Image (cartoon, rainbow, N blue to C red; front, side, top):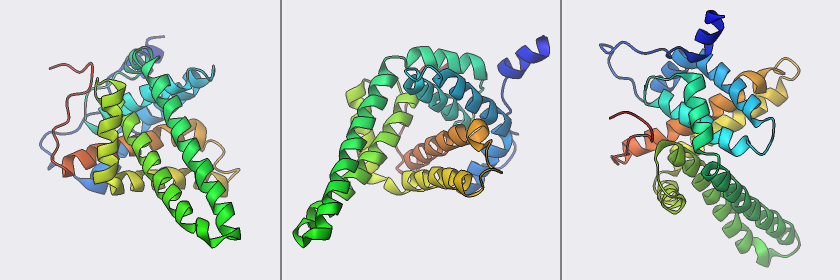
Length: 234
């Protein structure tokens, strides 16, 4: 059974330190090429951990924590790191994800309501535009908040504050990542039933990796010093 244990506990793939550093899309694709099998296993772990439903928020944060390790080229021991993060984010992760869901749901509800009213009366066009912009900002804020909580050991309020700042100053990287996530699910729908196994193998982990990579790249462009991820060795 040692081969089965090694499948889940062995160290992830590394890179040649003599290789010139990659950036942008080239780095994104290079990490996927190196870590694709780890991402498949991570996707399965997320699905299994989410089966009780109430554990889904913590599982989402645990998946994000492992994806942060991928983006930062840290040594990863998939099962151990995932389970440690699952326990760590059981409370804070659930609180953050539920808060995110409430904020985005409120924004979507307001946007849909004003859209319907604007079709009948032009005066509601301005409230519709404002609610649409606010909803988009909330989506960006929530995406950044999930990655920041996985990356840093900060209180919830500080996590939301930094996420709001990132959403305001660097919206484009996260918008591109969210577009990539949307494209993954559209591809699953368009190519069904050929794509029937996409959600079970890559959609969740690859989507979360895109969000983590976008947050890392934004921080690099802003020249902001990001603290080491919680639990990493110094």
